[in-house]
Amino acid sequence: NYIEDIENKLKKINDKNQAIVLTGTFMYKSNKSHVKLKDIVNDIKTITDNPIYTNNYAYVFNGVIGGFVDIGEHQGSYVAKEICNILEGNKIEEGILPKSSGMYIFDYKQIYDYNIDILKMPKDSKLLNKPKYALLLPKPLKITVCIVFSLLILIVVYVVYKFIIEIKKSNKNKKLYERAKEREQLKTDFIVNMSHELRTPLNVILSTSKVAELKINTNNYDNKYLLGKLEQINKNSNRLLKLVNNLIDITKFEQGVYEINLENINIVEVVEDIVLASVDYATYKNIDLVFDTEEEEIITAIDKDKIERAILNLLSNAIKFTHKGGSIYVYIKREKDKVFISVEDNGMGIPKDKINEIFNRFYQVSDTLKKHEEGSGIGLCIVEEIVDLHGGKINVYSEVNKGSKFEIILPIYMVEENFKNLQIKDIQQIVKLEMSDVDTKEN
Ligand code: ADP
Image (cartoon, rainbow, N blue to C red):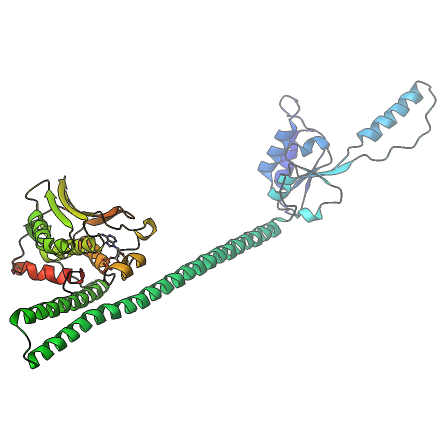
């Protein structure tokens, strides 16, 4: 009757193979009050690890594993009713003792706490406290299923990942293939162009020298005539030289061995001198070449030769792709620590979809070139590399039949003087070389 007695008895049992079956209620010895069912279960759990079952429905909700819960209440009340009938002299209802109405009820949580094989639960057992999606499997099996399931998910994720990577790879390969094809096409175009580019000046040199030779042999010449022929030979040799120089430079860029020698210099003067030296070439085509600047002196670290080359390239393109009677405007301004040099023409312009392509090696906007001017499609690539090596950038704004504006933006800064670079060069000679593919009268 007393919980203390129960506790004492339990303390003496030290057999792991025993199970406890709770039935009935208990009192405290001290005040004879009833111990709450939950407290009974908790007290027993502090004394022993042996599993606690019950045949009392009320205990199932208070921390025991469960069991076949039926203490015969139903049958008891039937019998009591019959006894009352007898005592009151009533007629006994003829009947049979009702069948047990008990059932198996188990607490899901306790089953796992006591590590009991859930598969051994009697059929039609009722489970309490079962989470909605919990598996009805023994703990080790549950762990195995979880591991297998996790592995399966991992495998699925891995397969999907691999699949995506493969798709990406094949897309990348496709793009690479397309690019390689494009480059191959560019190279083929380049070779065709280059052959033409090489052949034209070579033909001029050969035929001019042949004619001159004939004239000399037949004593049918004067000095002016011969000088004219030599000038033609010179110009076409320069054209060949420019082509070969560009090819060498482009190979240097590719190998990363292109060097720049910086010196602090007035970039306004450098650009102005180049523009002035190019005026004649513009005049041949009746093009108005104007130079303008916001400031007379902007000293910054540049490689003079390379910047001259870049500006000359933009100028020679502007002259090449501007119609007779057009105009070219070269403008310099300074904004904070940057210098802006723009070469603007009102020539034939570049189609919007080709603007990003023109800096690609060997690229030429086909319909502008073939009909109008010579060129190899390397010039702008070299300009961009030179600007890039100076830490600057180049922008292009262009509209077909309206004109183009190429804008070089360079950072203004100083370097320690580099005396290595102070060799004086003949600017006219440099211009002559860079302008060698610009159409002039006496080609
Ligand atoms: P090249 O002039 O030797 O063909 P570039 O690399 O200098 O090579 O120029 C590439 C192409 O860009 C030119 O063939 C031409 O189609 C286009 N282009 C460059 N500058 C201009 C310009 N000022 N106006 C119109 N088209 C231009």
